[in-house]
Length: 248
Ligand SMILES: Cc1cc2nc3c(=O)[nH]c(=O)nc-3n(C[C@H](O)[C@H](O)[C@H](O)COP(=O)(O)OP(=O)(O)OC[C@H]3O[C@@H](n4cnc5c(N)ncnc54)[C@H](O)[C@@H]3O)c2cc1C
Image (cartoon, rainbow, N blue to C red; front, side, top):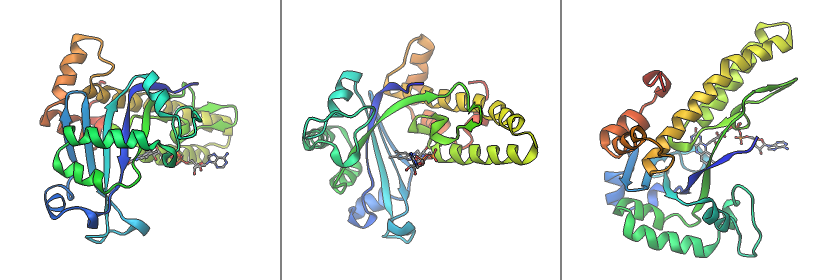
């Protein structure tokens, strides 16, 4: 099984709440925020600070900026300062300085002031390419896959941790419900593999907001709808997305 590159990647980082301007803290910090433009999406939300700090002033803001790039460009980006090339993704501390400088310059013309404030206080931004991956089986003999090993939905739905935990729980429940281990693993596979497919496919569809993966007129209309505040609320800000979009 090989992950398939989606055609886009994310710049990421998490500035300290205390470093941000009073204006950014007032207008954006408390919220799950989005900025949309043609082939562009930036988003952010408050997270805990160091040592799981939740006190006001001690938290961080998780910032992500999606950028479209073909596989050739990604390959060039996954080369470090010494010319070493990495497969799939480059370790965050090894992201080249020229790429970071170029990203900061482009941000000045593309992003709103609050996100620029975030970026100026992210001292080591890094990027993660987005891949689609879903194993056709979660069980191979006595080996059972859970979490990212089983499937990796695109980050739009923020579901990787929940999915990993739910799969671990389903595996534990299956093993405790059947004396026969192979039967338990078969039950786990039947319950969770189709769900994995749905989750990955849902997240892939949301990527159309970035103008990638569009094939039909229906896709085009869907991508346009995702550019609107209503589209964001109905599709990205939807906590129980599997129940809300059962026929996807
Ligand atoms: C930058 C970033 C931001 C993310 N943000 C979010 C988010 O906001 N919300 C969300 O839901 N998900 C998010 N995710 C996805 C989420 O982190 C993963 O989906 C989740 O961690 C998967 O859990 P896991 O247990 O399957 O794998 P992991 O958390 O990757 O755990 C695998 C563990 O196995 C260990 N390991 C690997 N190889 C070996 C070995 N040979 N021997 C022993 N141990 C080994 C690793 O060190 C690691 O600790 C993010 C991911 C990244 C990279």
